[in-house]
Amino acid sequence: MVKTEVRALATLLTALTIALLMGAIAAMLGCSQGRSSKEKVDATSQTPPKLENFPPTPAPKPVRPRVASQGDCAPHYAGGGTGTCINNQPCRGFGVRNEDGSVVCTCYGRDGGCGDGQRCDPMRLACVPEKLPPFGRAAAQ
Image: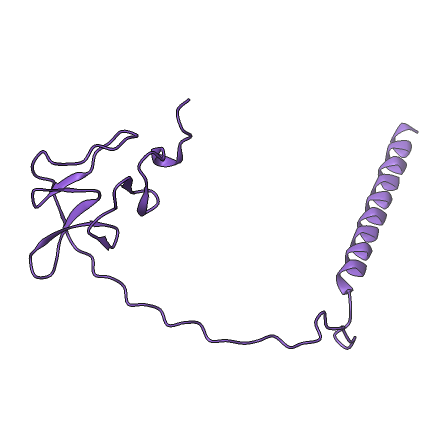
């Protein structure tokens, strides 16, 4: 008697599981059908888009080998840190060697380095105010 009740309960649970799965499949099929491809969709704009060509991509600058700082003329920044000394001149950046062998001060493509009150930032790859904290940190309180 107990075995028949267990079998009946198992059969009932199986039937409920199958019914739930069938319902879920029907719901998914109903949701995925959406609009037919023949329905007309209204435009959101009355004017057609203006298509323009992209501007030409500039040629990449050549990679120039870096040159070590030499001497003690490197500028000291207000927020800490120092620049470099290139050709016995203070450089707010770093030194690189040109194709002709000459050494110049630069900051990621800006020959001559950064201006007064700026420093060359390796995270932003640009000149930034020298009081701006390095590495995106907040200013000290």
